[in-house]
Amino acid sequence: MTPGIRPLVAGNWKMNGTGESLTELRAIAAGLSSDLGRKLDAVICVPATLLSRAIETLEGGAVVLGGQDCHQKVSGAHTGEISAPMLKEAGANHVILGHSERRTDQFETNELIRSKAEAAWAAGLVAIVCVGETADERKAERTLEVIGAQLAASLPEGVSAENTIVAYEPVWAIGTGMTPTVQDVRAAHAFMREKLAERFGANGTHLRLLYGGSVKPSNSAELLGVADVDGALVGGASLKAADFLAICETYRNL
Ligand SMILES: O=C(CO)COP(=O)(O)O
Image (tube, rainbow, N blue to C red; front, side, top):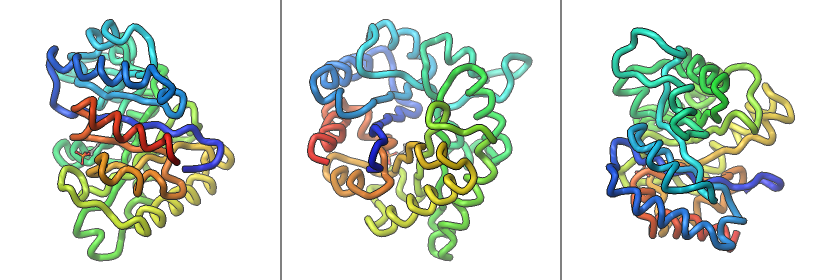
């Protein structure tokens, strides 16, 4: 945690979730409507197809919604794409950008992610920008170099705590059950904080830095307790309300 920064736990449902899954979303919202909701912010990034139904289900409350990607343009001939204003209209507050699954599968570059962040801001969305090294890069001891380069090139000028969140997700830790050591997470987050403060001044100092990659109820206390870790970006464990809420519960004791 960083003193003065309110923690945030975000769920990334990825390509999971149909109408039936709204039951889990309702359960997450109900769990956070207690005093637990006063300890943290929660965002669930559902598939875009669920956004409008999800917003009706939630009727305000302690959980806000996000998308998982947006196009860099507002509209046009881009079959299959979704723009930031469309996400906003459908009920999103946030949007994940530059997730490693998109960097890898869709060959997204830092420059593209940067233009998507600008599009997200223009639509009034908070950009959750993801960075992280692959297993090979880690083996070659290039972790900090890689995340430094990703941060430098994928964040536009004008970053602030109101428009941007950074998520450190080591690629090899996503969906594998493997996590970096506490020391490695601390080093990565301290490095990101330093780089962000260097470039954005006080705005960089106040940015929320999330850790993502195999966060579960069994390891959340260890990972969320690390200095400069201001929350989590949770994949698999965000699909079940009980697991997501158990991760949120960590903040009762931190
Ligand atoms: O990619 C992730 C969140 O964006 C992490 O996924 P898992 O929590 O399933 O490892």
